[in-house]
Length: 223
Image (cartoon, rainbow, N blue to C red; front, top):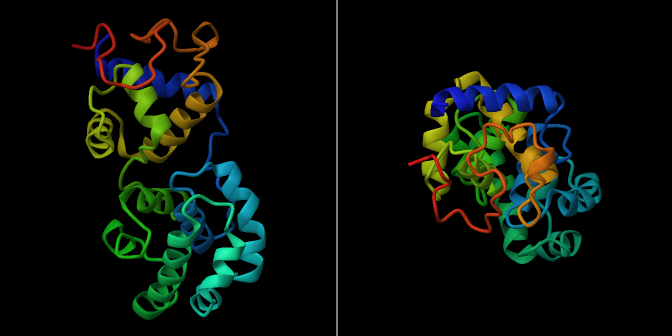
């Protein structure tokens, strides 16, 4: 099966398997999603979702968070990895949203990337899930690993993986694709114990039966 054919088949099967695939960071507006995504860097969504209810209750708007004391934010998110640096980013992010973007989360990758703590991946998360704008594909560890194992890319750099996937999948599928591959990576194609025998892609996956700890070697059949 050619790569573009496998890509389409992968998407269709995963969409049937996970019709409700979605962003698993709890949020109710673009501001909350931006904050949650900043917190999620090198941290699990589960941990972030444990912290954000109290954080959002105390700082429900950019205006509230912009005026927060650093030590208070640190205390609120202290169970999050790198909480001190992230506290500075959260306050700085809120301040810039107010000062430069009139209190509204911006709607372009370029503008979002100006916010402290926000890079291209975070921008893609916010645009795709808060505004239904598909400007790119979110490539986290699950997307990078599963895309590699499925023979959709031979790249290991997230930005290069994103570019390859963008060429394979229609623009309107980009946000859904990230969710589908993340669901696959968390539920079936688990890094340390992949359940290949249960996978709906086992007959088209070039890495079937291979336990890949790190995508350094191309799966068979992808060269």
